[in-house]
Length: 382
Image (tube, rainbow, N blue to C red; front, side, top):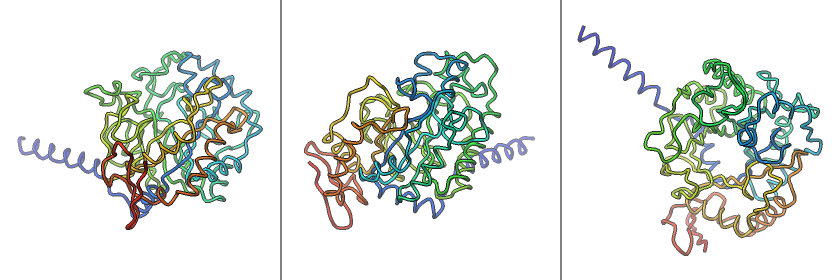
């Protein structure tokens, strides 16, 4: 019996160890290099929540009941959306990729998913925004990364009982994570099957099932089954990079590490207690004003100089900058964002050699600035 028990324990340990192992494919490693070379991307927070003009967390912040929030689908009608303009704004800004919100925490899907009726194609607008954006990115040579929320304030099957957010949206039915997991896998399969080459999946919401950032124990209250989720993504598109905005050390199966509103190695936001990984690409995401989604009262715009300095400082720390805009509910990217992006793009036209394709962390950041390097050239940014 003792020998049998020892064998069982050994088997379970070996099984667990195997589950934690991850060897990136050749295509994935090549995409990691491309991702590091690109250095600069456009984050787009946009969806049904934009109608309310109070940011993408409005459903949670105002404790809006699901039955009331559902009404947004009846009048979200972005008739001014133009995929060519969106992609052109990014390209003219010197950005090399776009990360687009396919589904945020309110559960609204910005594509024609077959797994839910809560989606863009059931609005008066009726068109598949993601399809148009994916086609235009392909046409203009811009890589596409898809943001996907793990948590959901709208659905009953998400484990909201143990979550930190979405408590006031009126849900009373018992959650069912196995059902929710299958829903996510169905949606991810759609995204990675019907919209061409996807350069990355940008997950968010893991933190809903943990203690707040900075706590000594941030283990998740649920088993997300990341082996299943990440394995599915890498099987469907081996090159597709996976990142998870959990504010922790990267998990097995992840391909890049992101920092929310912080440069790697800093923690001004109170979210970034994790150390920067040395073996994978890094990315910092930041807003142009103070909001991610459209906020009608937010005029806290960053200057062109601030944007350029942020880009330089991320590159000097060997990271990308993912700079966010929250378009109007009509689908237009507001002029203040466009002007700033264009001016920063003009700087990149002149000095882009010191950013694109470079690597950082040549020396630690100094009071005077940072260094980037490429081949045998070094670039000092003051």
